[in-house]
Image (cartoon, rainbow, N blue to C red; front, side, top):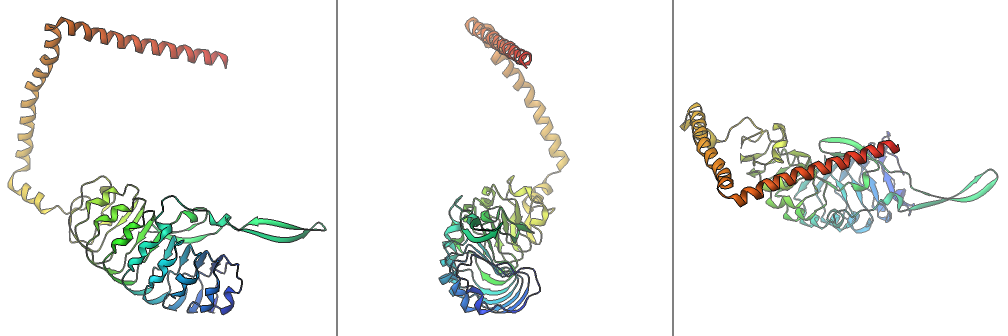
Length: 370
């Protein structure tokens, strides 16, 4: 069922799940109000529930984790949901996409969120869209027959890497946890680092404190990480450089300090990824670190450059002489080594010549046959 992007208002009807075989329910981008009806517990086969961008209120029902055991995609983004996040959601072992952004949720991230099995197993996914077949009696050309077909291609708007766009064919690959723009606080639970196949993690716009956990480097499949607009403190862990797939990083507007780790991975991001941290320094920011400033104040940079050049040229001359006579002096004084060396050079030239001639011959023959 797809009712998304209309002007539907009112509450979600209690009879919405009277269709027991319902697999996909799109209610997003409407003006629906009230709470998710208790009768939705009957949608036991539901794989996708998109109720984002509405005016739903109240808490996230605990029965979602207990009844909708087949759920893989849950989008409740941009509503007015409040209170703590129920730990019961972690019972959804098949859940690979959870978007609770832009609500009024409070409390801490449940430690049990590290139990999302589908977000842990790397490379294990199924194209659920073609897992289910639909059958229908069709009458055409005077004949009635059974037609078997797959579900229509699913689509959903997803926000990741700072961009919102529609995903269809790649939807089954999306493993995302988005809790941004709520009133959550506390530290990042260590258990989240066990979600090894997570594609995107967004915790921005909350009140999280403490340091960025060192073990975040375990999320080796992570391509998007947004921790901006929080109260994180301490230094940026150097382990972030181990996230080789990371294409989007935003650590701006926190209380981070120290030097940005010197690594090719972290320095590929522009200054906007780090701004708003008064104690942060180093490239790509314009703010130099205090140690570098002190060292520069103690010695004139021009004098240091001149001294380095003098030492470079002074050491280069004797190095060249020693290296030259070490090789050629040995060859001149030792006749056997001299002989072997020039034989080796001759053999190398011979092999290159033979290889070149043979390949040119083959190319010519091939051209003639064509």
